[in-house]
Amino acid sequence: MRNYFSGIVGNQKLTERLSMDIEENKIPHALIIEGDTGSGRHTVVKYFAAALSCERRNGSEALPCRKCPSCEKIFGEKSPDIIKIGLEGEKTSIGVDAVRFMKTDIFVEPNDLKYKFYIIEDAEKMTVQAQNAFLLSLEEPPPYVVFILICNNSSLLLETVRSRALTVRTERLSPQIMRDY
Image (cartoon, rainbow, N blue to C red; front, side, top):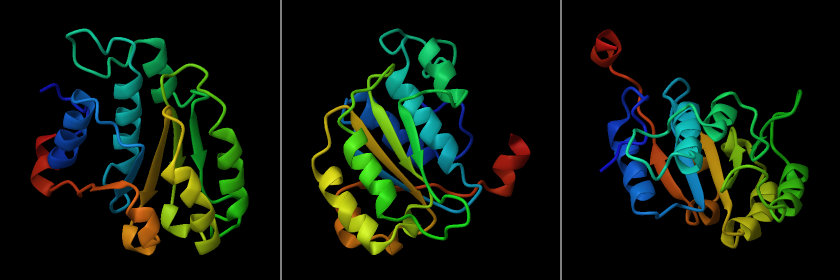
């Protein structure tokens, strides 16, 4: 099996699981990435999006290549098909307005990539109303949409949200792995 996360140190169980899903073309429409700050959640998201979008995906080299235009846009944070939603300004929660934007935007097909990624940062800070409004989009997204919810603690999300997404957990790097790296 190909490792689509060869640039990531640690989190071996997580990267093996996601690599297997990619290899078997069983891409989850929604993914909750749970873990402590500094555990690599955002890096995993970039690699996941790049592995699904890499233009050299059918070749034999390691993916993502980080050289094709899609990979460069993703790693350079310049892709119009990666939409980040999170806390704005002084707000302490993510409200219904952010979800309303998503509900209309998901029907606009991707510009450059095969998929359109909606990354909800600090997802556990979505209000109950926002999570309830998000459910319909989460249940039946267009085939090109992938939702990624990044959080410290997924138990703070509604059960109805958690039940509709694959939850994976990042792990802090051990001192030994950090020394070896």
